[in-house]
Amino acid sequence: MNFNALFSDFGGYTITGLTVGAIYALVALGYTLVYGVLRLINFAHSEVFIAGAFAAIWGWAALGLDRDSVASGFGSIMLYLLVGALIAAVASAGTATVVERVAYRPLRKRNAPPLAFLITAIGASIAIAEAFGIYTRRLPVGAPTIVKPDLVLFEVAGTEVTMVQVLVIVSALAMMVALDLFINRSRIGRGIRAVAQDQNTAALMGINKDRIILVVFIIGGVMAGVAGMLYDIRIGTLTYSVGFLLGLKAFTAAVLGGIGNLRGALVGGLLLGLVENYASALFGANWKDLVAFVVLVVLLMFRPTGLLGESLGRARA
Amino acid sequence: MGETVQKPTVPEQAGAPAVESTAKREPLLEVDHVTLRFGGVVALNDVNFTLYKGEILGLIGPNGAGKTTCFNAMTGIYQPSEGEIRFRGERITGKKKHHITKMGMARTFQNIRLFPEMTALENIQVGADAHHKTSVLSALFRLPRHRREERDGLEKAERLLEFVGIPHRMHDAARNLSYGEQRRLEIARALATDPVLLCLDEPAAGFNPAEKEELLQLIRKIRDQGITVLLIEHDMRLVMGVTDRIVVLEFGKKIADGLPAEVREDHRVIAAYLGVPDDDAA
Image 1 (cartoon, chains in turn yellow, orange):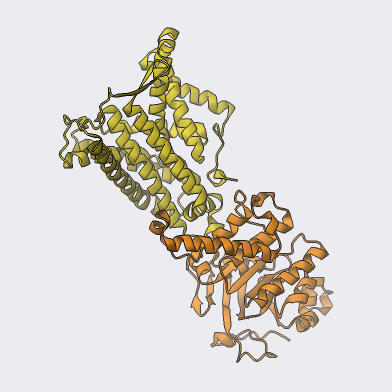
Image 2 (image 1 turned 120 degrees about the vertical axis):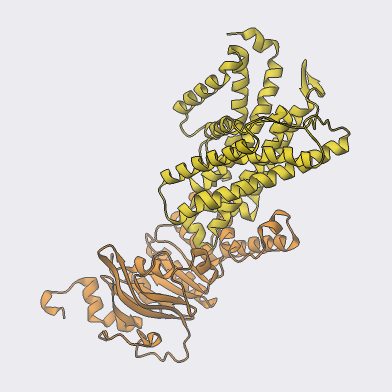
């Protein structure tokens, strides 16, 4: 174990871990929201993320930015970020809506067993990923440089923090706070919590269950879309197949924090990002996934419902 | 008092007790020759009665008589195998639950089904949300109309907590309320949907006599607000004390339908409740 590598740049590994974790957390929210309401793992959510990531790149391309372009000027950078986020959010929310309408709702109407949902979820996931794969000829697609990766914003205790890292962490946190307020304070949030606690009673209280479910898929999509754009900015290139592992890790993050629990998704995502990065310092980058999943297994042995426990309904009281 | 067995062709007249003049009364809920089967079990057998606007109707019968099944059919949870149920003249069979609620029917549950992790206030707000007209978008952007509805919903929820007598529990999670308070909260939540018809499924279950008396007063107060009440109960004394009319079920069949005083004297009802020697049963 290379403790030297870890401790010589502990701050750097920490900030990188938090950045990766913030993206996991945003994607994890989609798994957790859908699970909280439907008790269903939406395995196609990784492709909801991918759709947003591609949409942002193509959106920037439509604005005249190719893979070699470098955006400059604060105003235009902000504009590109906002437009990219908007396009990505719409594309992901749209994909999530289609998945719900095509893969899940018809089964729900027929009272299909949970296993059937699992199969259509995996089917939808593979179908969407393959569609992107064929369209991009399975080649990586380069993203323009919206924010320069080496732009250092400030330095804390000898650790340089880049603009990209701040952007990813701050926007992820802001979206989660907004979501938390929305779920706990708004009328629709109240409806979501009611459906999560007792679908039938909620329907008898006049709540349109199908609409609430759609809203949940859309919110999850918006979060995943923004995560997709942040991924483009951080990594700079996108391959159709990256959704699989990232989705799996986001799902892991959701389970780690307690699936169905919004704040758990945040905690789980950040924790997974940190563990992964510390592991890559200690054992080498090849080992990071192995260590991350071993940690998951061990943690679940001691806390089977995750760190913060399951429950979307209990978001407040 | 014997039951006429023939099937009339005009459903509106069916099941109406002879002693009452139905001319001035407006039917609100019509249970029209409803039969409900679960596999081979006949849970309801050709049940037929009408609930009129402004009355308190008791639906009674021994345990297992089909009261809750009937109730569930009336609130759209079960689909009748035969016959139909009309609410405000409209057929409710096959309608979605949230539509039926919006048509003005609200219910409570025999086994309390509040949203346990929400506060008392939020539970009622969920009910009040039923009639809000603003869309998802106007809620997202907090348009004035949405804000007004939210404020109205909050005021209504506070008023209803006061009405059922638990204003001090407003901010407590529903699961932390006492049993009696939970029952009251369920009634308040149902009232928040602005019902014309309130269906109470054994609201007095587990109550002591003092609590039952308070409940009777609450039910009368609800009726005085112009809300029709359907009360399922097997406590005869409670039903006799508050209802205008009573329908009695036994083994899924209606065995009596009339004023409390009449039903009390009906030998079939007495038999159903007390049991009679074989030679006495018709």
